[in-house]
Length: 72
Image (cartoon, one colour):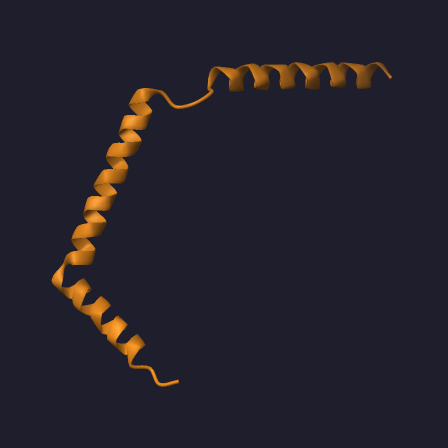
């Protein structure tokens, strides 16, 4: 019985430490938000350039034309 009590005490201590650590890391700070926004804008810019490039634009138009010309 003594061993089970010690294990239970260790588990409670571990749970307490995890909860304390989680309270300290509640959310992102302003610099992390800024870096996230910069990364999202950069990804959007690259995606826009790829989608509006001549080859991709032509392929997308071809896909739309084939989809509209399908007989049902």
